[in-house]
Picture 1 (cartoon, rainbow over the protein chains, first blue to last red):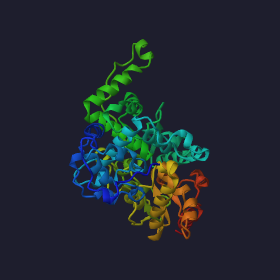
Picture 2 (tube, chains in turn cyan, orange):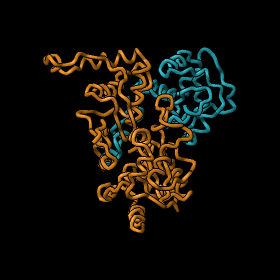
Picture 3 (cartoon, helix red, strand yellow):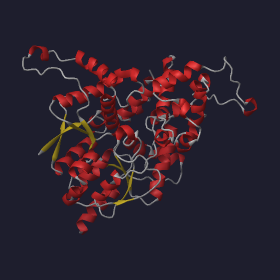
Picture 4 (tube, helix red, strand yellow):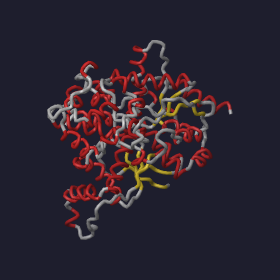
Length: 146
Length: 311
């Protein structure tokens, strides 16, 4: 799993120029997810409720901000999109009504469409293949591979 | 006996077949039959995020359309994943005309050949979300009724302290599922009380167990499951009760790994809601598949039978 993180504090504030902002990215995320990333006002409710937050290198609320700022590379290289378990806790708690889980789904889809599966059937151990109930395997393939 | 259209789903038909058996047994004791659909496929486990990927909704739509075409307007499932997928597919078909038209275009192409030959074949009608999808727990609450269940108890689970575990997909996203309050649900609590048992309150009942991460990142799932189980046990629960085959797998079979990572962790039995329902309605303990559990449940099951004998 890639461990890209935010630029170290000494590099902040981030340089936002035509070269570092991908305008098309935010639009694509909005199109796929049906959500408006600009609605997010950074309250942090999603990050405080997320059961996987402590496993993430970039918190959900920061992911939202990075999407607003068109930081495509940082977002798609983060481990966050692959550790999100799609539990909808963030979606339920967002005071702005953003379906953040769908934004995560959209980010996964954009990353997968670039051509690399994050996790494929060949990585499932024989023991897992024989014991994990099908919903676990099918949802895993659907979320983490093309 | 009333027949209710029933979609078991892959897990309940295969590696969790003991849970399917307990559900059928419990339903018959309550006066209705879970009538399995004549033919069905995997529902797809998760609906796709975007409108563009309508292909991923075809399997679940076909299941719903076949249910309608067989003359039934209610479909019951006992797996949270299937429930979530079928219900959200239905929701999209009802709310989004473009999705509805695109899905029906796919479905119309696979119209069975005999329909063209037989004169009696009914004309094609687009599937527009006519079927109502219900979780068995929802059926028990809204159709059978918890009061009626209480009246039919032959082996009340008195004295048993149960921690309800909801997980994620049974309740969320609430605007498409609408089963209960996503933050403060009460459907499993009502179910526990209807069986005569006591509810244990603890803070992690709607927290995720890691879902499919138990395959891709097992250690993460171990940590999440530990939080849930140790919290329930810490509040005095004798067992955890839940309604999702994947949560069942994670919370039951992960306990060995949890014990290795967190010394001092005491294993706690996990039950599928249908198993306790069947037992409370007088079901046989040998037909619940308890031997397939990773954590020994005999202590709790013995106490259920001992309680009955004492009365």
